[in-house]
Image (tube, rainbow, N blue to C red):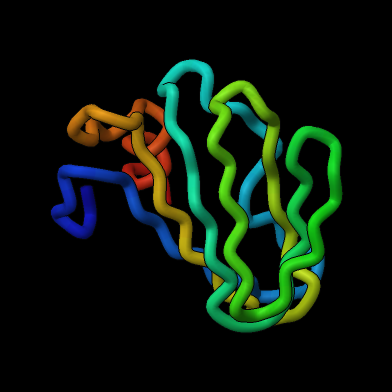
Length: 105
């Protein structure tokens, strides 16, 4: 909980190079999280349930169903992505993945 937010999870990513993977392909079945992504600057390519979504700066991508696989890659250096997620109706709890990422990041 690097930001001290307890009602939802929020992360930010900045790509050093085109082709950087922001979000590895995954689902949220273990956490039941829905996720909202916002491309702050640059351009990202999302894949959601096998569908490719081109997302230039200013684009929101919302994935409601935790079972859908999702991932994102930067198309430009400096692409900045904001990710917000949580389980509807529940207070946010840091997942094991997030804890490992922060501890090893």
